[in-house]
Amino acid sequence: MRRIVVGDIHGCYREFTALLKKVNYRKGVDRLILLGDLMDRGPYSWEMLHWAIRWKEEYPDSFFLIRGNHEQMLVEQSPALDTRMIWRVVGKTATVRSFRKHRDRMKRYIPWILDHMPIYHVDEDFRCVHAGLEHEDFEENSMELMVKDHSWSRKNLYSGKITIIGHTPLPMPVYYDGSGGPGLDLAYHEWRELPSSGAICIDTGCVFGDKLTAMVLEKGKYYLEYVDSGVHTVNKAHFYVGKIKKISSFPIIRRFCSGANSR
Ligand SMILES: [Mn+2]
Image (tube, rainbow, N blue to C red):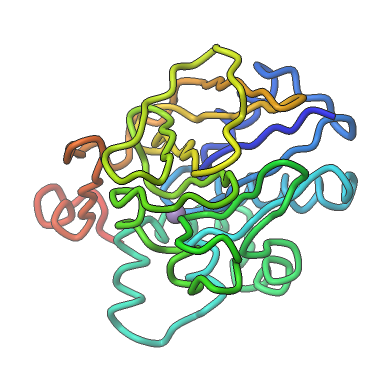
C-alpha cells in the first residue's frame, strides 16, 4: 500500500486536490495522511475541513490526520488576550470568513478535531507529528514541542525513528539526521531510500505563495511531489533566516497601512 503524506494545507484546498491528482492518489487504496494545519491563513478552510470530515467517514481505515497548532488554537479556545491576538495574526480571520460564507461556525468542529486529529500518527515504517520531537517516545515530549515548536528544526538534534513533520515552512523539503547543523535539502521527483532515523520536514509554505508538498512512500522508498501555490494575496512578505523561511505576517500593521483588512 502506498502512503501519501501531505504537509500544511492552510485552506489551500485547490492546491490540495491538484496535488492528490498529481500523485495519482487512489481513494481507499492508498493511505493518505495529513500533517495538520488544515485551516487558517488561506481562502478555503471550510472546504478543506469538510473534505476531511467526509473522507474520514468514507475511508476511516486509509485516511489519517494529525493535529497542528492551528487546530490546537481552536480546540483550546483560550480566553487569554495574547493567545487570541496570536491566532488573529496567524490567519484566524480568513477562517472565520470562510465559515461565515457557509453560515457555519468553527467551534462546532472542536469535538470532531479532538476525536479525529490526534497529536501523532504511527505507521509501519515511519511516524508523523506536526512540529517536532526530541525524544523517540512520544509520551516523553511535551505537547508544546510536538504541536507548536518552531525552534526545534534549527537544532536538528532528533535521531530517533524516522518522523515526518510539517509546521515550519522551508524553501525545500529538508532531512534532519539528528547531527546538528542545517539539515539536507531534498530535491523533488527522485526515489530515495527512506532513512530509518531523523526527521523530514515537508512544509513548503503553500499559503505563503510557495509550494504544497506530498511525500509518496512505497516499499521502503519515497519521492517528493509538489504543486505551485495559487495563493498570491496573503502574507506575501517573508524573509529567510539561513534555511528557515520565517514569516512576517502582520495584518495589524497592514491594516494601518492600507485599510484593507479592517475587520
Ligand atoms: Mn503549524
